[in-house]
Image (cartoon, rainbow, N blue to C red):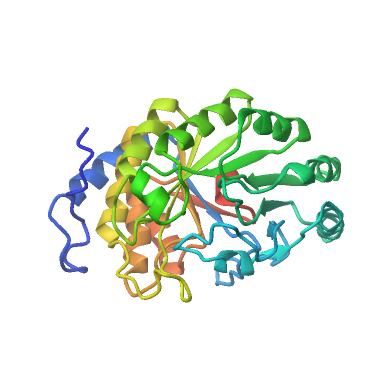
Length: 330
């Protein structure tokens, strides 16, 4: 397989500047999807963001994203600077987390995503919350945890607490890890972490952030190669969104053809893996074109679709459903 991203787009007539051959790449990826998966797509609309269209309206309190560090983060990565934490529901002690989970259960919630800011080693400080998580599992709620870089011992403890799924960003470029995440780590640290999480029998959904290095493709294909080598049941792809108030504000974001290219290559590299495209993606006038190319590239799930994307899925003879939970666990 050619891992370079020199492919073009079937949308070249509508979006100037797309090279010629993405149409062929998308066609190959779509063919793989058709052969292996049933003709259906899931649209994930968890409560972290209000979704209200003619097709579906979600419940803002179903499957909340919770920060166990509040707005605090020791790393303040260049793409986030803690701003993503501000949009999460804070629960900074095990007691607060347990009380929040109880309220959510009483309101009919299905589960919650537990995340937070990282410490200086790139870990979300989850250890002291594990007994509370075990109690939350007795409530019948699904629990997903965004961990950062954890050890095999910590992964085992998460498994023992009954965590349903772990989310792990996987970065394939050392310079990006140092420059954007402010960590003295290597891609190998992320690959080892992924293998250790899998090794204890936890469901894990590795994430690749496309364009993480200030809008450049740098290490994403290396990460995809390693994920394909390791073998996972689920893969989540997202794309950099230049947030205001961060060092990347106003950045020229990664272009849509590069995103479509990488997603199609992911389908070809991981033909039997359930691939989702998550919440983070660029907004703008070409967003609808991007989402349609993601469908062509063979994704199984997509978060918060445009109404035009729902119509496009129908035109591809895909049955669709809406699920009020994270796209990694649908």
